[in-house]
Length: 219
Image (cartoon, rainbow, N blue to C red; front, side, top):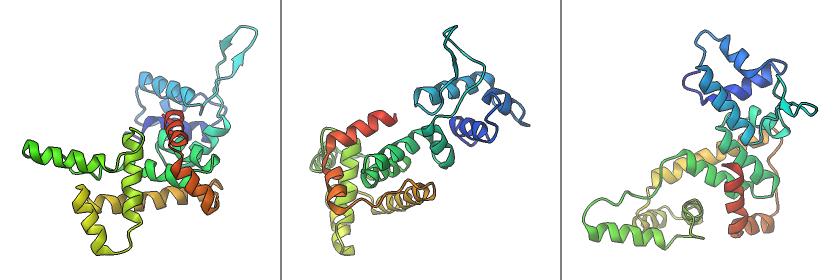
């Protein structure tokens, strides 16, 4: 449990024991997490829209049980960090699963851009190469553009040249691609992967404002 993000553990606890409080379920574990950490994780889930505390409308106060929202039910079924999972789910619902899973995969991997070490001239060259791939003033959209530009190149030799030109790690880009496939598989497993048409997928990639909204909504 100590290696699992507490929000995920809390969601799983609620899914397995829906009538019990999350804190009570986790307190029964052989190595229970601290109560304060559980409360913080529960509050995070509420803020993300995964938990909807039952409210006594007469008293105007939270009752003594939490409830999974429809979003929370889907998140509980995904083996992902809740924010990454929400980004993927929102992307799937809005016809932008492909770019959303690419960004989500990039967030779970290290940056493919080389760290700007060395002389000021080298750092300036690295920054300029990254600027050439920049989109919408967003690091996330820049990562998406870098990955999609790299993926569109079919020749191994040309891919290597592209990475060298833009100071990108091909190994990290490969890792992002593998993670993206895993995210798609997780969405398919819960029936959320939609095979949108090519025009719809292309439009989603080009709609920077939609993707920015997805990121804000997920985080």
